[in-house]
Image (cartoon, rainbow, N blue to C red; front, side):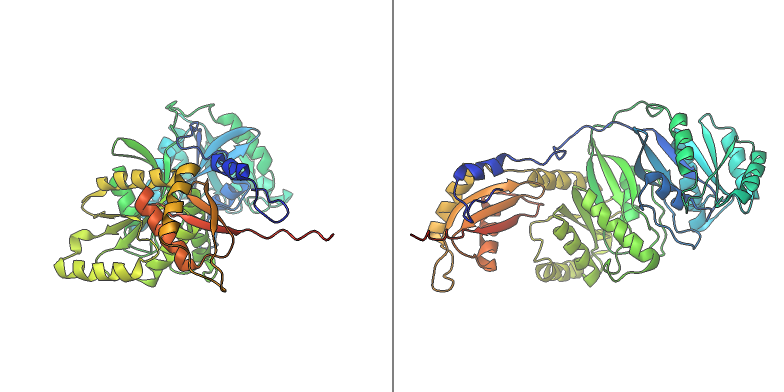
Length: 471
């Protein structure tokens, strides 16, 4: 937008707004497939810290407590002009059972599907029986295997790193993930070991990005596993099993989607602490990076403050939205009646959201997610031509003019859809429009043009009077 002398004067300026499209946001933009590096090792050797060092930014959740990372999480990395994907994994332990066994299984899948594997060992401890078990598995692998001797914070520990030759998987590269020592040298070796393209040679067609969000234990990981057809995310009855966002390419209704399973939100990001703070931060980042969010709600329980907090986060981020009422197999007629009343009261901010009743446990109606997602994304990308928008708005205002404010009735001079993702209307007026009247315009706008599943933002630009020139 350009502003001249405090007044919006030239209609040509507004038509420029209507044709503006943000760079890099075109739907279906192609993405090249990238080679994959899996980072594995036993618990608490510094894998996630090293992943953050490789990425050059703090993405993976890090804490002194062992076992914080549980799923396999993919991140995009760039070094020396080469792009590749880094997969962080939970601590791998042989013969693990229960939750830890599921974590180990995720690490094994990462090792089997990667183009290269980086084994992280604590040089201050030396090779343990778990490290030797990892090495035995990888010695039979046909893919490149690199060995990082972590926690080499000064020259005195280099000799300890050299002892790791005994693992039989090649030269140990001494690094300090915490301080960054020799991380550049390790990255040079990683880039040299990775192939130019993934082993399968496939090219991704730019799948749409979907964030699975909701309060803890609402069934996000179970839903991801059901629609992907594999144990993609660790599932346990303990709330808060997922800590990092889990990224998966999923085939749903003959279309490839990029689903991201996120940590359940208990508190606001500002009030959380420790691991919960970083998990909440990653969830917010996943929502911001997504195009559409699937908000899972437990249909068998009353709407909670946590549910509404998640919805507010999605709306504030301006993302398309689908409400998935999970555990529908547990809902009887009485509960359905109660649920309708709760929705009328609790979801006043998102009456436009698409709704689907599903069961992640049984797979009931999960295929209905795809049409709902497509509807929401189509609305999110929709643009109304300026001429059509102003013709409709003129008729609406003639029938129902804005309320008088301060003894004067504001006039709407012109309107344009200034952007998409989310659709954003800008109204140029002679005075302030009350919030109630803006909601009225939005409601009528949706009745006329649709936009189901997408938020619509309405901004008001008040024309300022030009100061009179003194004679």
